[in-house]
Length: 259
Ligand SMILES: C[S@@+](CC[C@H](N)C(=O)[O-])C[C@H]1O[C@@H](n2cnc3c(N)ncnc32)[C@H](O)[C@@H]1O
Image (cartoon, rainbow, N blue to C red; front, side):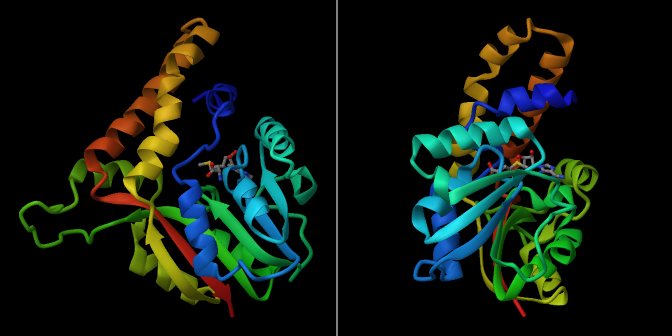
């Protein structure tokens, strides 16, 4: 897919992946950050600022908001200024696999829907050194909600559909159940504090609905070019997959402490 088209499709929106203000607040509570003072936080793969804005508004903290794409950071900066939060957020155009932070300099690493760009395990290994001892990691990551072949109970999800398994095996081979993700956290020097799966509203209402509402305007902007139509078709396929198979996968939000 054409990268500049993907950026143009996603830039006008408050978030670039599943999640919601309520999910970010729930993770903040689980992490026990409310009463902490003068926190140094990095929000990695921040997009246009969905979580950075909630962190800045809720916590006594300074947030370095990192993304690979300046266009997303420009939008984040505009929104932070609108909400009078610009003094608390520093945008940083950088790659999450080559971060410029000093060792043990961060109280919190936050990352919603972005660690998959490195891979979950590679991300844990690469980011851990930047956290102070006892620092908090809060990441959301694609997660199977059921085992491979759960007992089928009427009204509940049956065995994982082969079509879905194939899609995710290809798109992100590290997709796994929460127990396996939590075991990875433990292997890589983190003590798990909490986990919750994002509810369907965090996909359908918070992320997909605004995106879908913008498809026509996006196609108009790009004169219905082949590339623009392919970009919309790919996103429609992703939405349809979620609508059909939402019982089987979501993002899991994982909160853990560096040990
Ligand atoms: C699924 S979006 C999530 C955005 C945001 N956290 C949210 O929840 O709305 C993934 C984000 O990671 C960013 N990204 C992808 N690869 C990256 C990299 N190597 N370094 C920094 N950011 C990256 C993308 O630009 C995008 O903003």
